[in-house]
Length: 104
Image (cartoon, rainbow, N blue to C red; front, side):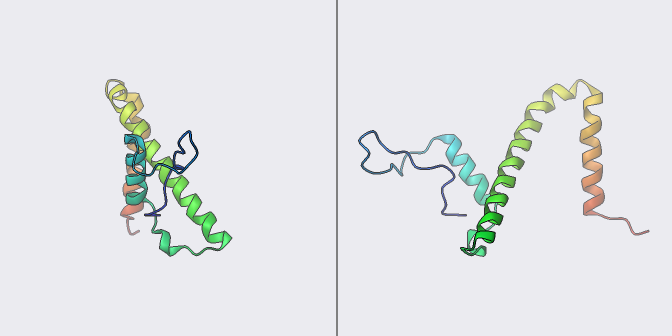
């Protein structure tokens, strides 16, 4: 996971070799996010099942990043409309209860 590129490398027009040194900001942020949130690639073998688990974990990592971006975009809009905070509050309560289950 740490050494695996998120995007395929760009091939110049003369089709000689991929350009490895140039990455745009989005690619660097996405690669850093995968390094931060994704599992270590060494934990997976080369079997088909493990490679599928690695792919799923990378997709989940990307979905979480998009969820965070969507929440950051929505937060200023939802600040002035209290009914938009009901789902956010419910999610926070569920996460809190999941992390700290009460003993009954």
